[in-house]
Image (cartoon, rainbow, N blue to C red; front, side, top):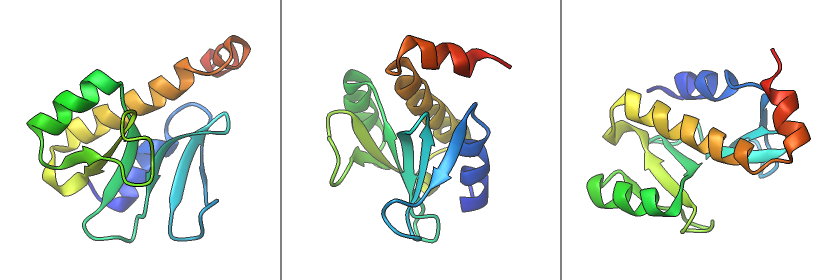
Length: 117
């Protein structure tokens, strides 16, 4: 997955936006003001921080050397994913899971608004 593909995929989710609260080098992808992905799209190798269910996070870290606890974030809930070490399909699934976890934590009224076409 290229940086442009990662950006395009993240922005394809309902109500997703890209923001730069940490400076121009860090793309923060949000839904309803809540972060679901963080990446330095110019960095090599390309890495993305993604939210993950804590039990699944442990399993993924054990199975994939390209998935590690997230630096400077809650390591229980966030993984750093080195994109080049994984199949694109798995990276897309991890991004989608992160988005879904964040949406699930939003107030019901906001979730209902996001579900509308």
